[in-house]
Length: 369
Length: 184
Image: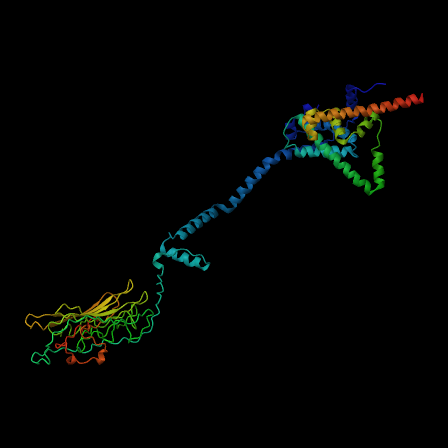
């Protein structure tokens, strides 16, 4: 028995190939394999060339004129989008493209400037502005010939300045009535004599909505800067000093509204009677401050006896800028403060302390527009 | 013989090179298909050569690599053929009988029935490696490429397959000797 060695076994395996049957090569098979091999070998180059040909065909299909037109269209679109074309062409193109909801800039000259809608501030209806009524100023007629009614025998007590400032209610809401308009002191504090110290008869009247005070804040009077007709007469007896009449019309309004103050102040030095009627308005920024001042100074006249004093009255109506506000103040003499309203004010003759009917500061503070 | 085949000439589609290639590799494919159990070795050979011709343009390598390439394709076709025959047997008994008669082994094909019987008892992968390495005559590297394994792994697997084949043949020899002793 021969045990199979490795070599012998390998030979036995190799002998198996001898059993393979050789056959005649089929030429048809060879021809088919050959054509397949050529096709397989040529494929990679064919694929590359195929793509090149397709790209070239696509480019060539557009044609020279096609590419030129496309370039021109692109350039035109660029110019139109930047608004670089001439105005007529730009306008036409903009009209055409607007049909298809494409907005392109139009020439500047053809752009309609639409005014922005101005927000109308709702203006509270105010009663029609009363025309500035210039009340006849109670002119103090100094009648030198008129004998003194009652000579003051007793030394006049030093008047105690009791400035009664009548502040109207704050008009924060701006819906004040006309009668309660700030700056108009109806109670006529500090009246001296008949109607002393009235400043500003028609304060705070105006027709312009902004900056109205009270009823018509911010409206200015018709006669700007009118001063009192007979301002500053001081009728205090000589030697009387310091009649202070203050009539304040103050209104502190909300921002945007105006504050009008009417002050009638008279700070008199001894022997002097200065009645000031001031209409002050402190407005918000951008609004106007109108001051109406009625000033009266009573200076001792060297020609007069030392007990007497001449009254000089200044009525100033100042209006700043836009809407005028009237501040009325009534100068009230401190020595005789009569709180009664001006309508009920006693006659000047009834005032013993001011024989010269020192009306100070009448109509001060009307401010103009 | 295969060394003389020029891969470039095959790619160019030269008829002489293709005739030489088919005459050289064709019988080996048929024998390999027979031994691997294919029912129609000629069909496997034709399909294998056609696939090689279709893919020769992508092939890169020399003649040895081409042999590995050819037998890897041949093996895939054999597997396909075996599966197809399996399905075919389910279709018709008559056709199956015809196929069995056609594939009936003869003396020319199976000259060493003991060795062939031992190869049949090996696992399919070991059988295949031994066929490619010792029967077809591929080198170890070419065999490794044909079966898709590394050269080292193929070398080890070949060694184990060879040893197992020896064991199988030795068992047969022992059985024969024992039978002879009993008979005597």
